[in-house]
Length: 263
Image (cartoon, rainbow, N blue to C red; front, side, top):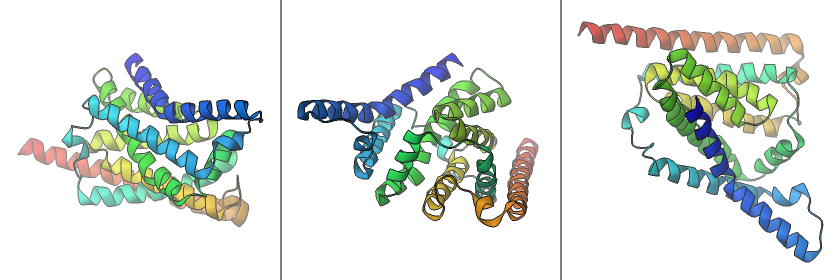
């Protein structure tokens, strides 16, 4: 647990290096010019996107140096039906998260401004929808899950990695979603032995969040537009999709394990 906590702190600091450098530059530049510093100065769409990309590049470099990217088994393609089930689970997770969002507090102002800045830049949308999930899966369902499973049992590993994933988001609203999703992503990675299904679900979830940013007014959910009865009905469909796909994956890999043991 201590090693995993150290890993997450280290990765968080690595990801923040570009932002820290940019903020430092902004502070010095504003001080020299005799101007005040506003939060918007540090979150212009392109600058923010570049900062995130550099942070991801540094993280990948560190993972490569630590030989965390060389485990080919971690990237193996699972059964085709498992990939389809992962897509269905991702859709179910999106629906459930959207409904549950109305019961959670709003994002902190700083993070709301950052999200609004990101969606203004097409490259930023790609970074959050694809690159972000890739980096986070390499960290949490790769490096951290691997470190924990050497010390803990199955569910302790999944729950601790999910908790750290939630903690990584640094706010209650996103952290709650991340913890719940982290349990699913950790479990499916443990069962399949691959981060690919978790990556698919993560990309679908982040892409949906970007779409909702464009379609919805800030801090609104489907319930605000369709009403509670309709939103609850849609949520029930999401739960059925989620539970059904989880059950299907469980049965598929349980059957595969039995066949391998007979062989």
